[in-house]
Length: 279
Picture 1 (cartoon, rainbow, N blue to C red):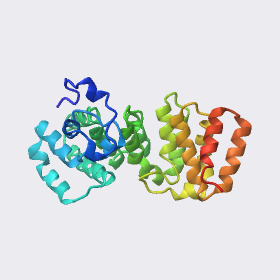
Picture 2 (picture 1 turned 180 degrees about the vertical axis):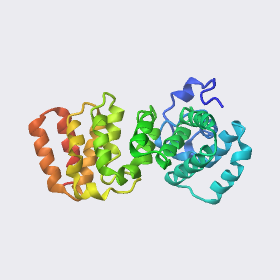
Picture 3 (picture 1 turned 120 degrees about the vertical axis):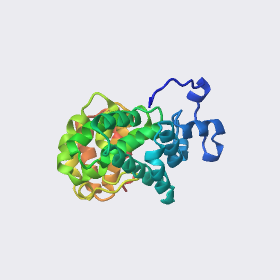
C-alpha cells in the first residue's frame, strides 16, 4: 500500500497544460487520472475524474475488495455526479472503515490516502478530517494544515471546504485560532485563513454571522491587507466583495482605512478588486 511507489511518468505528461474541455482530455491522460497515477493540472481535468471508479481502482490495488465492494456499490447507487457531494460521501465511507481498524492500521491506511500521488485521493483525506466527529476544532485545523499547504490547487480548495462547517459552528473560536495562520510565513496558509471564512464562499454554505457582522473577521483581514502574494490578495478582495453584498458601507470604510494605513500597490490592488461590485 505504497502511495508513492516508483512510477515513471513521461515529461510531456507532467508538463502538460491540460485540456480546455472534458471531451478534449486525451485518453492516456484520462486513464492516468482514473488510475490515480497522475495529478490533474487544471479545473477541467479535476472535475473530470470519476471518483467512484477511482475509489474502486485504488482499493482493488490495495487488496481491499472484500472490505470495500459493498461500499462501491452503495456509492454507485447514489447516482450523484456533483464532485462536492461525491468527495464527502467517499470520505465518510473511508472514515467508517478507518474507525473499525486498530490504531496502527488506521494510521497506515490514512497515511496512504493522505500522501497519495493523486490529488483526488488526497482530497478524500482532507474531508476525512473535516467529517471526523471525534476531533475538536483545534485538532481539525491542526490536521488539515498539510492539505491547506498542498502544492495542488484542488486539494487546497477541498481543505478549506472540509472544515468550513466546523468553523461555522464554532466561529468565535475559529477566528481566534486562525489569527496565527493569517501571519504565517507560508502564503498558502495565510490564504487558507481568509478563504475558509469567506461570508459567502464558493461551492459552500454561507456564514450568516459574517454576512451580518463582517467586523468579526477584521483581525485576520488586517493582517493581510498588504500581502505581497496575489493568491492571498485575491482571497482578501473576494472576502470583502462577499461582505459588500450585505454591508457595502462597512467595506468602503475598511478600504478607506487600509489605503490610509498602507498606501502600497498590494493594498491598492486588494481594495480595487474588493469594491468591484459596489455601486
